[in-house]
Image 1 (cartoon, helix red, strand yellow):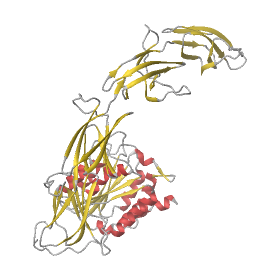
Image 2 (image 1 turned 45 degrees about the vertical axis):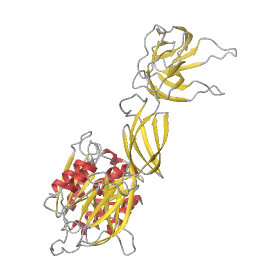
Image 3 (image 1 turned 45 degrees about the horizontal axis):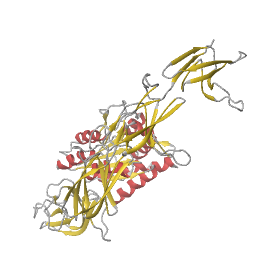
Image 4 (image 1 turned 135 degrees about the vertical axis):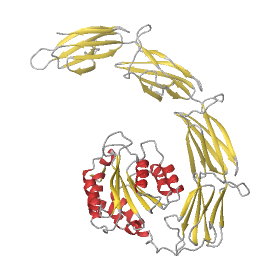
Length: 550
C-alpha cells in the first residue's frame, strides 16, 4: 500500500507537463546516504525508482526533461554532482535506467547541484525549471537562500521547486527560501502519501500556460511598490534586505492563491504584475503584515506596511565587564505569542510593546522585561551569570594524574535531599576539555573511575574559570591468568552474614579494575574440569599492582 501511494510522488510530475512546456526541466535527485532511510518499510530510493518508472511511461514524447544526481558516487565529497541526463526530448528511458543504478552513499551539496542544473539549462537563454527532491539539508557549507536570491536577481525566467522528505518546520524553512526566492513552491511531506498528495494538489492549482500576449508598450515601469516602515511616521526601510514582500492573486472567493505572482527581499520593493486583486504580504523576521490591494497597468500603486516594530540587539555576557559576547549563550526575545533568537550576539525584530528577553548558558538562566517602541533600536547587555569548571584528577595526593575518557566528573548540588541524593547540574567524561558551565554557587565535584567514587566541595563565581583537581585515592589492579574463562574482583573479607561481594569481572585471560586502597580477592574460573583459583591482592593508592595466576 505504501509503495502504491508513493507512486504518486513523481507521478504528480507527469501532470506538470503544461508547466514544463514553457521550457526545459531538470529533476535534481538526492543520492546522499540518507536516501536509504525508510518510509513505511520501503527505502526512499526504492520509492523514487518505482515512481520514476511509472511516470516516465506517461510523459509526452516532446517533454524536454533531464536529471542531475548528487552524493551517489563517493562518500564525504561535496563535488559529487553528476549531470546524468542532459535535458532533451526522449529521455524517459535513460532517466529510469540511471535511477535503477543509483547507489546513495555521500553528502548533500544541494545548492551547487541546483546551480549546475541551472547552468545546464542555460537559463540566460531559455525559460527553465528545476525540481529539487531532497530528504536532508545542505551539508557542504553553502547557502540555498543566497543561491535563490542570486538566480532571481539574474532577471531570467527560472523557477526552482523544492520537495522535502520528512523535514521539520525549521529544516523546511532552511530550504524553502530557494523556492520562494525564485517564485517556486516548497512542498513538505512526512511520508510518501503526503508527498504525492502535496504535489498533486499544487499541480492541480497551477494555471495552464496562457498564449503569449502581444507585445504592448508598458504604461509604467512598475505598477506596484511595497514600502515597509517600522512606525507610522518613521522612515522607509529602503534597502533593508530582511524584509520579504509577496503579492498573491485573489480568487473569486476572496482567498489568496498558493503561489505568489511576484516577490523579493527589500524594504522598498518594486514589481510589475498583471492588473487585478492581490493580497500583499510583508514579513520581517517573525512579524507579518498583509492587506488586499487593486493593481492596474497604468499607474504605480504604493502599498505601505507599517510593521509597528523595533529591533532588539543583545550582547550576552557572563559578567558586566566582559567586552565580547559569549557565543555559547542562547538568547530569545518573546513578544505576543511569538519568539525569535539565536546564539551569541543576537539581533531580533520584535513587535512594539512589552517584550521578555531570556538568556541561557547550560543551567544558568536570566529573564528581563522591557518595553519596545515602534522604530526603536534597543541595545541590551544581558548578563547570564555562569562559571566554568574544568576538572582534573589524581590517583593519590602525590600520585600520577588520571588520564583518558573513562573517568566521569559531575558538578552536583552541595546539599543532599532527605534521601541523600544530589541533583547534577553538569557532567563530562575525561579531564580538562572545555569544562562544565554552571551558575555561580557552592557545589560538590564528584568523580567516578572504576569502583571508586569521591567528592570535594568547590565554589564557582560568574565569569570565573576554575580548574579543581580531585584526589580519587585509588590504585589499579591488573590480573593475568592464562587459560582463564572469567576473572572476578571480590571484596577482601566476607560480611557478618558470610557473603563476599563481587565488585566486577571480565571474560578472558586478563582483567583490570580501579579500586580503593585495601585488600581484595581475585577469583578465576576456567572452562572444563580445571579447578577454580582464589588469590588475595593488596591495592595501594597511586600504584599499579600486577598479578599473574598460573
